[in-house]
Length: 102
Image (cartoon, rainbow, N blue to C red; front, side):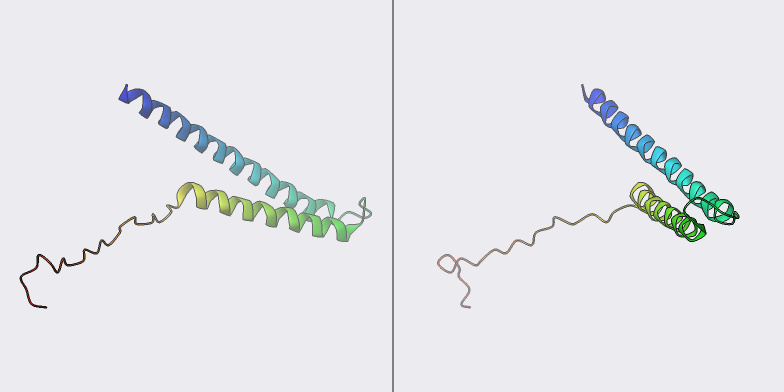
């Protein structure tokens, strides 16, 4: 029965990793779309909604995709520091049973 639990854990880890890689691919696609809008559509003679809109929109798409990609890579590959659950136990001296004159 122990192998069933580890198999289930491995499956959920693989699904989580697959989900992150899909988000990475989506982020790369979003960056490419922003790059296309910025470098090709914004330099046209008369684009729909004007050149300034496409320049700003392309930069915003690229920035959002890079921030999103950074968060995903941070969560996927960089390890979090674990909090130590180490409790320092303090034992008080029992003065009734103690033979030491403190």
